[in-house]
Image 1 (cartoon, protein in one colour):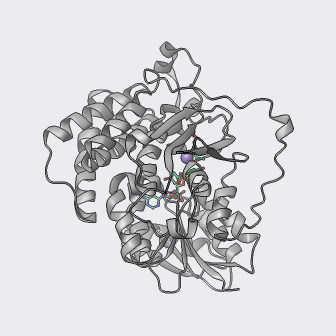
Image 2 (tube, rainbow, N blue to C red; image 1 turned 60 degrees about the vertical axis):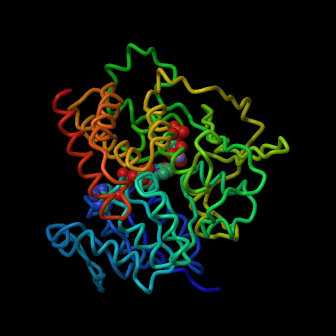
Image 3 (cartoon, rainbow, N blue to C red; image 1 turned 120 degrees about the horizontal axis):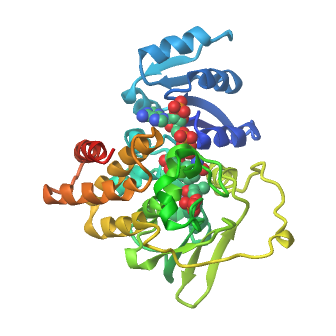
Length: 400
Ligand SMILES: NC(=O)C1=CN([C@@H]2O[C@H](COP(=O)(O)OP(=O)(O)OC[C@H]3O[C@@H](n4cnc5c(N)ncnc54)[C@H](OP(=O)(O)O)[C@@H]3O)[C@@H](O)[C@H]2O)C=CC1
Ligand SMILES: CC(=O)[C@@H](O)[C@H](O)COP(=O)(O)O
Ligand SMILES: [Mn+2]
């Protein structure tokens, strides 16, 4: 068996930690080539020591000094520094498999570099596809990469579609006979909260997801359901489906991870416990199934599986995302950038939760009034993202 040499981008985060957990269960299949962190340098030291990583990537020279100062083992890994080093490491000839688990558009250049280097890319970083879906999918096709969706809904859909090995090569057409994709959403921690109470919710309340344990940014996105909006855009690119053929369904138990409805009326679903080690193990082992550490699922104890329509008044971010997808790529970049800025300000206690959709909506309006050419390259995407962030930051100050 050929050992996969894995680069884990964002190893100190929630997906990163779960990835290392699965990898550690299969030393005969995987070895860790490289790890990356942004602020949790102490944790990176522990991970590098435990996995014998050859390379670590940190954001700046200060972080490099902290890493070296904390290191106690015999052979210091090679410490690379900066955003370019992240992309170079993702494309390193020694690496076979890249887990793209940096949060936000910050993860796009390295994820794209992995695709352009023809790697097996396990994509958790949904923002990469939201901002640059066309570019990313083309890179997978042009460079013979393999793209395995890790986001639980997209992983579920991938599992419910035929011809997985072909699909991982990013064909530019939908799977045969598919009528609709049914994306499930938990509805987050505020699904039943009185609408007037949303004004006063705190970051910790917004991050208390009912079913999943995740990083803080995606947890807030789940609360606003912008996460589901980003996932609609992600599904559009991954599975070549039109916006009208993607339906969002609230499913509070988070046990059905998504479904595919076929022309003959069949609906295929993927079920499992809400534990990201399942989709991660699927991506790592593909096309084989490998153990993930997730235990038996006692269906007899699950008394019900509920489904309901999302309420667009409670979740205006979901409507904004559908609108952005229909408006085109520039709007998707603006939507994502404005959301990243607004969520960061909300988590820092500088704006209220209810300002998040207003800031995104206003930013989209201002960006579309100043619309230029469709961003065609990575540089164009990052420039558009930068512009939208500046506008969103101004709007946050006005609404602080
Ligand atoms: N968590 C989950 O269950 C799921 C997550 N996803 C997606 O996966 C991605 C990661 O999510 P999650 O693991 O929850 O996030 P976390 O916040 O837990 O982890 C983010 C990782 O990215 C690193 N990072 C943060 N900012 C930067 C930056 N500017 N440059 C380089 N590295 C950076 C962090 O480093 P450090 O910690 O050292 O600061 C950390 O390693 C997101 O795109 C999310 O939407 C998708 C489905 C499920
Ligand atoms: C685990 C995962 O994939 C998250 O994106 C999850 O879907 C969040 O839950 P929501 O359904 O509440 O957005
Ligand atoms: Mn998801």
